[in-house]
Image (cartoon, rainbow, N blue to C red; front, side, top):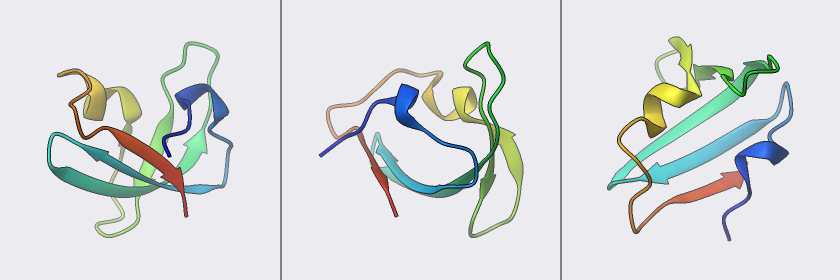
Length: 66
């Protein structure tokens, strides 16, 4: 069951599935503009969560806590 992006918490780990791709990440920063800075748990790269959702939400969109 998908949770809302508004429910993300700093330090928690999540799994995002969208458009056939799966990402596991940890929330590093939560600024007020809803541009969450996250760290990929596999590659340890940091990026904005908005970059994963900029092409919209697919039919398979799912966000869950690990």
